[in-house]
Length: 305
Ligand code: GDP
Image (tube, rainbow, N blue to C red):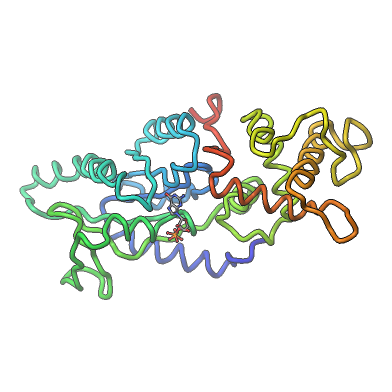
């Protein structure tokens, strides 16, 4: 179904994760705070069994902070330490350092009881593509630390970055593959820009986003695009209201997209509204944060917590 992730890619990524994970004590998993479940692969729970776990809710600058707090709670209840960050900024790195220290505490105490002292905790960054792994490694580990070369007992060719006296991090992140089987996961990842858009039409993504925002963040679209509900034109399917075979909500979303096209002057040569352009504009506004801080999924209080 997807263009970037053939079964061969996934098998290779999984094999590398399985190899690397043997070397480490702590899994630092990056997720996108706007889609914390869709941007992870639950296989990591099996792969990381018995390891200390830290979930970093990245791109938190783009997410709804109330929702992020609920997600932190969700992951903590599942035995993970958490921290919230914008991987591009050094500002949040203190919180990450202290979360790493907390996550390592148990391991250090276990070592001490066994008489092992001064053995650094080995950590690994893992996450699906585009979640911010390289950005995080650069910001967090960037200049401040030294790289350690191959060492006896450690698989040849592995580079470790010494973060401080107590922690070393594998310099190549573990790549997880998104759970594409779930169509909603694909859709949300496409909206956030984590996977290429060609899987779905921009209109399809935009119409879903409009429906979600209308339900969860009422007023946000009208505010951004200066639209008034009672003056919305007809949508791309020719229905401005509750007529025809499509639901009221779908018709409403279509009318909002038409409204955006009108307000932003997205028109084709013959004067027809350019819905594709309007859809791309909306998606770009979402991705860049111009629509505001928005989270696209919440922990389900009944099913998941
Ligand atoms: P990787 O594939 O997991 O290594 O992801 P990258 O580090 O290449 O990041 C993917 C994109 O997300 C880049 O354009 C980054 O600038 C951007 N990015 C990474 N972290 C953040 C963040 O915390 N906030 C925002 N707004 N963008 C981020």
